[in-house]
Each structure stands twice: as structure tokens, then as C-alpha cells.
Image (cartoon, one colour):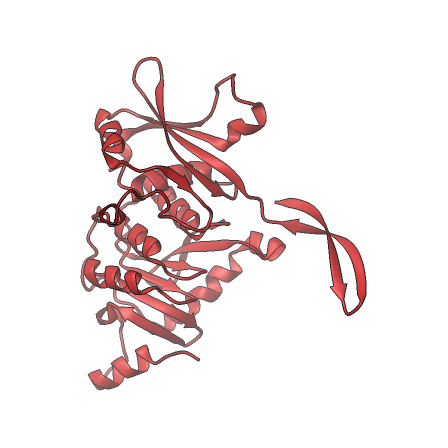
Length: 295
């Protein structure tokens, strides 16, 4: 976070005060391997500093560069004496012990310069946008209680400590099927917040996340659904709208995709079969009640 002098206008009056802003800085992710500590610059992403190792690991996994924790030796900040000291904490080295990782990176043909708003920048072709999920969501596990789903956005919001101070951060929360918060990460970028959550599970050996729900504070775009699918997460809940491509991907990969989750109301765009509707309700009525537009 950063402090900034801001002018506050009310009517024709101007008053000056100090405000708290979201920190946004670049993070360079490097792969390092072999004798002589050779390295390759993989990506530069704009992020909110914090949980940088989670972000680096999650990014490399959800982009299909890493397959598992066994490929990673260690993660460090930059120790290169030629780099300005203030920038060393903006460079993460991911030390790998699998030559295939570097071959996969070279074959990817992608320039990873990522803004805080887009997780797909740099793709070299339409075909390269779609990655095959590392884990396939199992079709009917877990079962989802609509009453639990309705509570998740509020639980995520209450866990956003930095948002309360800045008002300018996205969040991704990982919940179990009973609604218990497992992990939450905040970042200026939606996709970064998701990568941080996935990276935390990756580094702790917790993948696949087949019994969990991902809740995001912004819209559910294609890149969010794809990252969830890569981690084996079977359900994504958003407080906002999904995109058409996100809906198509969720259906293709067997995810439940929920949008406009606000209290007891939400829309289900894919995977409605996971919802535990009340006993005895007519199937057509179940579908109408769950999928009714929110206004």
C-alpha cells in the first residue's frame, strides 16, 4: 500500500487529505536451472506485492509450464548484485530440476508481459489460449448447497483486509463445500489473486482442489475458469457476470459456474447438476429458480 495526497471535493469545497492506495508493481518471474544458474525470463506481471512465491508458482502451473511440485527445487528473490536493491523483491527465481520444464517453455511461443487486468496477454495464437486442464473435475462431486453458495461472497468480502483500507483490490477465496474459508488472496489483478490461491495449494502439495469452491470478487472471465480447471476446482462463484467463453469452457470441462451471487439469489450458467435443490421440487422448477436473472 502507498500513501497519497488527494483532494476531496464536495460541492464547491476542496479539502486535502492523505489517502491509502493499492500498491502496484511489476513482478518478473524467472526459471533457473543447471550449472551456472542459467535462467529464462518467463513473465512480467503487474501485481500487488505480497505472496509473490504463491503467485509465481500458481502462474507457472496454471499456464501449463509446471506439472507438479516435484519439478521445483526452491523459490527465491533475486540475489543478482547487478540488480538495483529496490528491485530485487520484484524478481522471483523459480529453481527447477526438470529439463522438460524449460523445453515446454521454449515450445510455448508466448511473450508473457501481463497487465493487472488481463491474464491472456501475449498469446501468440487463438489455439494457444486454450490449455488442457491438468485435472478433470469429477461430474457430481462435491454437491453444492445453495444456502452455502449464497453466503460465500459475504465471507470473502469480510476476509478482504486490504480492500477495507484501499477500496481497490480484487480477491480470490478458496472454500470447502461446507463454506469454510481455506485461503484468500488479494491483488490488483483478478487473475493474480487466483494464481496466488492456486500457487499456495501447489506449494503445499494440495492439488488437485477437487473438493473446493473458488469465489472471485470480480467477473468470471475465461482465464479465471481455465485457472480453476487447471487446479481441478469443480465450482467457480462470482459476484458479477461471466463471459460467454467462460460459460462454454465451464460446460466443456465439467465445472459449475455461478454468477451474480448475492445473498439467496444467483445464476447458474453450467454444472447445475451439482446443486442440492430442496427435496420434492419439480426439475423444471429447480432450473427456473436457480437460473432466474438477478435484478
